[in-house]
Amino acid sequence: MAEHDEPVSHFIADMIEKDLADGRHQQIMTRFPPEPNGYLHIGHAKSICLNFGLAEQFSGICNLRFDDTNPTAEEVEYVDSIKADVRWLGFDWEDRLYFASDYFEQMYQYAEELISAGKAYVCTLSPEEFKEYRGVPTRPGKPSPWRDRPVEENLDLFRRMRAGEFADGAYVLRAKIDMISPNLHMRDPAIYRIKHAHHHRTGDAWCVYPMYDFAHGLEDAIEGVTHSICTLEFEVHRPLYDWLLDQLSVPCHPQQIEFARLNLSYTVMSKRKLLELVRDKVVWGWDDPRMPTVCGLRRRGYTPASIRAFCRKIGVTKMGSLTDIALLEHCIRDELNASAARAMVVLDPVKLIIENYPENQIEYLDGVNNPEDAEAGTRPVAFSRELYIEREDFMEDAPKKFFRLKPGQEVRLRYGYLVTCTGCEKDPETGEVSAVTCIYDPETRGGNAPDGRRVKGTIHWVSKQACADLPVRLFDRLFNVELPDDVPAGGHFRDHLNPDSCKEIVAKGEVMLLEAQPGARYQFERNGYFIADAKDSQLGKPVFNRIVALKDSWGKKHK
RNA sequence: UGCCCGAUGGUGUAAUGGUAGCACAACUGACUCUGGAUCAGUCAGUCUAGGUUCGAGUCCUAGUCGGGCAACCA
Image 1 (spheres, rainbow, N blue to C red):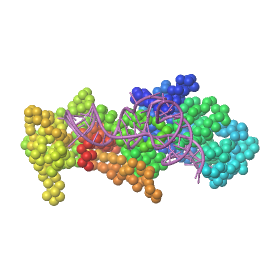
Image 2: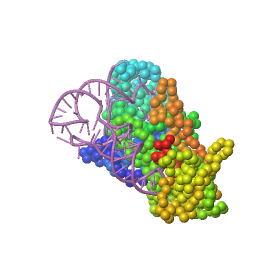
Image 3: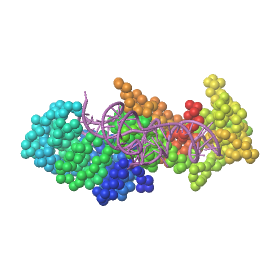
Image 4: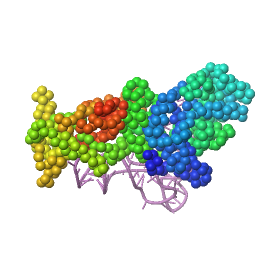
């Protein structure tokens, strides 16, 4: 599992290596600190792999800590899904499952300490006034009229805030730093607000809650985190992170390090937008196989190892970038090519009649389960006079380089016989091909000609007499542009939704696929990788999701 | 009209003052009972201008471009 992944090299690993070499730390501690207000996505997976991976690489430890300081946004449903996703990705926090809410009392005491030191005050400004006084990036702020409230009065008011004497928004506790700082976050930021809200873990024990900037560094320090890794947008918060820890009697002063969050082409990553897709039923749910969520990717058929491999390949830097989703697709193909059992499934069937093959005869041929893995063995595949082949594997008037069935051309039926196309039958009404006809060479059983003649094309097939109807969902990218977020004025990211992101069909496949266990992955030869959906499949009645198509150098060139 | 961060092939990244490398993508060929895989190859890059240096992707200065920051969100 995860502990066998090779170490990665990047600027954060370099920093840690140096800190260890310099004796700055004996052992490192990192943490993955999600807020339980949504489901994890592939961007979080990058952070998880980074934090847990670093700990593993340097023999340190990594905590799972829920940053649950805003009760109005957070729910246990999210806590549970996040734990499941981290575990599924292959990481283990052992007994170190922490919650910011477990430190509420300590954080409150630190706040009193800050007030007592004259470094924080209770402010009576309304939110609108607060904003007005703060100024804007290009104009300095001005001090709140409550900035020099005496320490005793601050303490008294803060205690009464905790006691529930005031309504939401009546007061706020602010750090007393610098109202003319060019960094907005240093202009006396709010660190505690009144919220008469039920918390999913502490219930109604509190009606004041710490703000992120106050809480996060304390959480890190309380746990003894050495390297507090976060995304780039928190870079401007770092002076505040450091200032707070410098003022307070904390056990240690962790180092905040920022890296660039993951952006993936053809999808959206913001929690707000993902939530919107779920809420408005644009997708089936958080675990819709088209979603970039961890549970969506899991249901789609991605493996933990493939996601970890992807996270290793994208690297860790401070430059904002857009990663091509083709790299993610490469990672799952790479793994499944080696491990997935093969099967023959015809997605868009048309009948193939072998004119010189006996009627009512069924014979069983050996199908190779995995050509990449000799251990995987073979299976019997039913063969008969009438088969199904892909509609696109026949062309009446085909280009020269078309190696499949066209009148007069010989092709191989995979693991079967060599057949020569004699023509086709058409629906007199529509002109659509209703059956393709051919004759077979009985000497070529298994697929090779005794005279050594070769054919350029091999196509897959299933016996019309012995095949199963299989519901299959062909997924494609959720959006049809690289940057769905990049919308013209008045536009909306949803304008870029791909209307063909899910095509539901009924395919004809080998009967053995009826036994597919939910979660089992296959390569449907010449088509792609598929998984029996863990949710919609029933025993004996699997529903397949296409994980990713096979690369197709013919189809790409000929549209 | 502020502050912070960043800039290397199409994309993602490496090179820590000394031969610009890797991966993905694309393309060509070989091979192939998957037009898959594999193998070989091709394409293609240091934002600009100065400076320091024997030598600069790397250090300095200025500029350009891109991103972030003005929730009692995280």
